[in-house]
Amino acid sequence: MRVVSIAVVTLFTACLPSAAPAAASQVAAGASANVSSSDSVAPVRPGIEVFLADVPARLRGKRVGLITNHTGIDRHRTSDIDLIAGHPDLQLVALLAPEHGIRGDVMDGVKIADEVDARTGIPIHSLYMSEDRGPTPQMLKDVDVLVYDLQEVGGRTWTYVSTMALSMQAAVRKGIPFVVLDRPNPIGGEIVEGALLDPRFSSFVGMYPIPARHGMTVGELATLFNEKYGIGADLIVVRAANWRRSEWFDETGLPWVNPSPNLRSLAAVTSYPGAVYFEGTTLSEGRGTDRPFEQIGAPWLKAADVVRVMNERGLPGIRFEAITMSVLPTAAKFPGRTIPAIRFDITDRQAYRPVRTMLLLIDEIHRQHPRDFAWTGTIDRLTGSDRVRLAIDNDRLPALLVEWEREAAAFRESRKPYLLYH
Image (cartoon, rainbow, N blue to C red; front, side, top):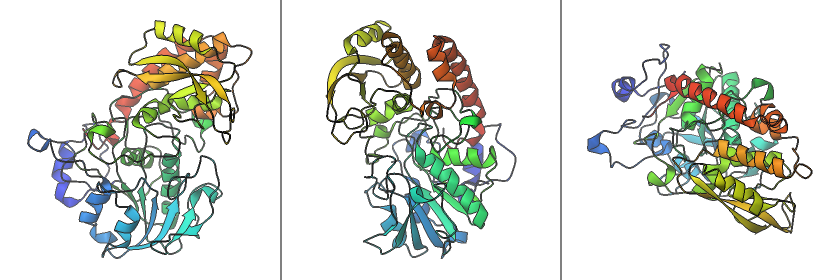
């Protein structure tokens, strides 16, 4: 269930959509989730600040297990770890690290051993080492409440969201509350793209039926997972104060932190919901270069030919540039080589649709390079079904994209009861 601080019940219920569930649910919130003209300049405050300013009474004195990494910070870049460890009303007893580790500097897929936080002496449990990548009973043996604070990036394949869902399930099994300290979606909360994941293709890069670009915050996703998909956690969502759905990260005033080693800019995050599909092909998605997810390439790619066709289409919000890119010797694809590549130049991020755009780009590369282009074993999990692979292989992508637009529009409506911000 959702939990709301009593001081803002009237304000919050007044801005819930009329289709909101009637079941009792509360949400802990900042002083204003919808911003009036009189407080439109109020700074956005992340959930950690709202939470620690007034810890719910039933959590005071509790032993906290904190799921976080380097993205869990306040407006002054102070770590959640230090803030909670030093708070008089809470006892921090365990840290739980997602993919990329507690400091966010470990490359994707690398296993991380348990360790101890040098500053606080608190044990760090690596969720990426557990069997199902969620908290184990041993990790939670001294924990009275789980608190989650990780930056979401707006794409379904982002594994931090799966970490949250698995941790919510672990909290249910132990019978303890689960607290989400919310943060803005860095690419805004208005644009929705792509079809819902087919449950048959559920994996750690997509567990529940949401679109490739969902336009929701982690707090909203937690509420959706909890209520619509039946996790049933004792869920407390602490809203970020003063955030509006229309705001992108660079409009919030919050400090930027790279969410992972290969997402190094807001431009990369903007393309990520679609550019991630290149991981499921024989092209490089830019890992091991200076601009991952902002450029793609392969030794056999006729970049100038593909760019010419793509630019002639006049897709909204983007231009393509033929370049060469140098790949580090440590990269998984084309290590140590300089290869032909295509860079994405976002000209209008509001008009740009990365999911549609990247599928059209893959389709064109497939058409021009029938012998060299190939799928890898991850493509169906990344796209959430086998429909993309089959559509491109059988020259039926345009029809699929029309169908996906309908599905995205339907999700925009169905998600309304779970939205916490205007």
